[in-house]
Image (cartoon, rainbow, N blue to C red; front, side, top):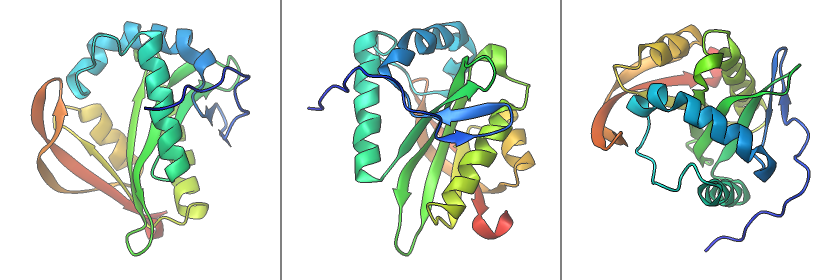
Length: 192
């Protein structure tokens, strides 16, 4: 279905912040990604879709990379890994999905951090970098993010970053095997 990505050196950072940088995922990131996902599984599981058995294996990672590549080529999505600027440690990931242009000019944000990296401001910085890029470079007018009501940490983060709660999306996303209601947050270009 999808062609496998050639094994070459990872790209340079796509977006640079003060303490982090964003770079497109690469096959050479697999071991770091696998470690952080395994170490953070218990904390992430209540907030994420159910993963297939091979999702954490190299074959699942390659499949994920190829899906990212297709979205990038179609200009419907962009996926980035978040790295610490000094140590180059993989911290987590952030994505823009369902990018739409024309009269809508919007995209959905998704993100996660490894458990050991939460509470240090890394995701605030990643959200700021990707938000500014979305508004200034991609020309989007609106960003959306949705989270379940039990994810208080994500709600506080979005509110701190200037996102506004708009309402409840009923049975919006299947989380950990169940259709769950989500709180929809948005940020407009004029809010920056």
